[in-house]
Length: 542
Image (cartoon, rainbow, N blue to C red; front, side, top):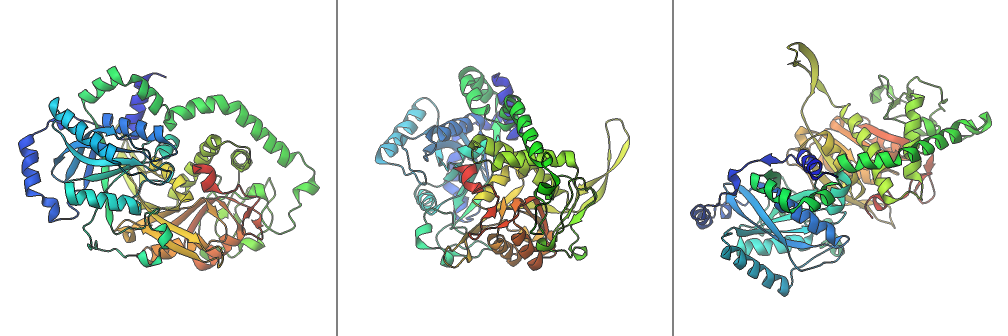
């Protein structure tokens, strides 16, 4: 693959800004701001991190090389007001476990030698922070990360922690990255609530439960003529190898290679549904919706989510004939169908349900479904009339979204839906909640919550691929409501639902909108969705 294509794709997906003056390093200015140390008076002083393309590529390559283990490196740069500018990065000779990484004495010695060597070749940038990877479980700070970052800030501030998820970078195209700084000990940021009392001691170190101990900085990427020259001359091979994982590139090639396979699977699905006799077509004696008629997403025809008009609950739904095109009520959403579109959905669902589907295919086809879910979810947000002028000079009466939007993913599986949301809404803010069910009591408990401070002013797209009993989703919604989010400003998106969960959600939150890709038959005695597709999070991230 041509490296120029990879570079252009990378620039587009990561909103790379082209600047040349940013590499100018003024030692006097850096010395002056370090003497004044304004971050000591304002714990939230630093708000942005700018990372050079060269540094970012080096970090991504390093993170990918360590999968499935965490890796660590050091970053060099400068300060510019409330912005930390990362100009270069280098790997440290350490390898962690699947959940943690620590610098050894060897790594510390390596850092000192590297920085001394940099100055000897007229590269005066200071060490400005550290980066490490979270393969497959997102960008946040665990308890150990918080301790490490706090110690660094105490002894060598200014210092920033950058986290990269190489697995999600590969599956999403856009680099999955976050930058963080910790607050001083005992500092409680405004509008925050400690939930430490709800955290089992065994989980504190490995989960990002210290929501009030750190904050996230805005990350942007820049590229100068120096970056471009270096990448053109020295990094051609690595650009191709790294950036060809971009969804915009890989998926085209992948789709070309797999299109005949998909067509075969679609035909097989059609034959399986339409090649049977009428007796087999009407064997759904439970009174639930026929499997092929459960698309609450892809084929609406003027359908709305007006719950005041919907009275049929999920366990009393009448069957839907395969040729039926009128909207049908299932308690939470109106559904209308176009058979040709249903065939595509059946084909996609057939692939991700198949236990023999590889992880790569599972991610690819799940992402297709999730992207459509997100687009449909956005379709249910309010709009305002908006008139614009086209290139031809004519006026066009269109619409624009009303109000601010954010996403909230229910960890871990919900994070699989974040990339699609970012593809649809640039720079969208995304919060996270971690809810786990007690296996003995069945109670859903909150272990972690980090949400935008102004979430009460936003429409919220709640992300969780699977809706079974509804326990985890209900607990997450309770958190949103406690933060001032209105019920009718929540849109819950999921790939697969059980009727029992839909019924519970409808009865408890009648004003909330739900967009689901498919409603399965039932829950079994273990509360597993059947026929289901297994553990979505395990299949997507493992």
